[in-house]
Image (cartoon, rainbow, N blue to C red; front, side, top):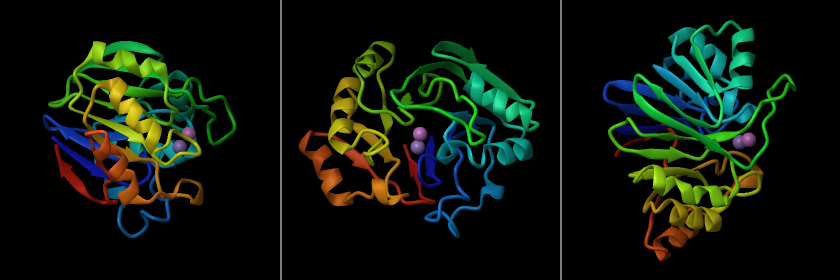
Length: 226
Ligand code: NI
Ligand code: MN
């Protein structure tokens, strides 16, 4: 099972021969320019945490090119369907079965509007039970008490959390989130893309080390074996 980072909150998980792409935002990210070619990304499923442009900007072109199934909140799916996306599965908070196994869509404390200004529905995070390793991708959120429920649902192998602060939780709160989730291996996202979320990488990793946890801050274009 691999994790490939495309910058900001965009990444791919490859597991069991299936490709899962999350929160496609590439061409608007100046840090990804020249490193990631959005037209070469393959996907069987595209999972979207919420409607903000820095999570959906490249969703429709990639979905149309790959015919991947778009899995997102109802309002995000309606927005994609208006632009021609046919293969889509709308959902809301709760759990559901897919051909790749069980998935929980769980609340994020954030906001969600789409690039055309329409209502984006509830922002959330995804817990995947059916991949070779179980993981939670929190999307954009602050620290929430709800994260304490996750160990009751699954023993996570790793969690993917925002660490940049300002629009989401920062590293201090991400350490607490990792404690709530009872997870020692964290991949950090949603950092460095904009001035508001620039972080000191070493100091951020040290906060996790001090708590007995590992924080991976992936390089754009990097693939990590999990
Ligand atoms: Ni957002
Ligand atoms: Mn965001």
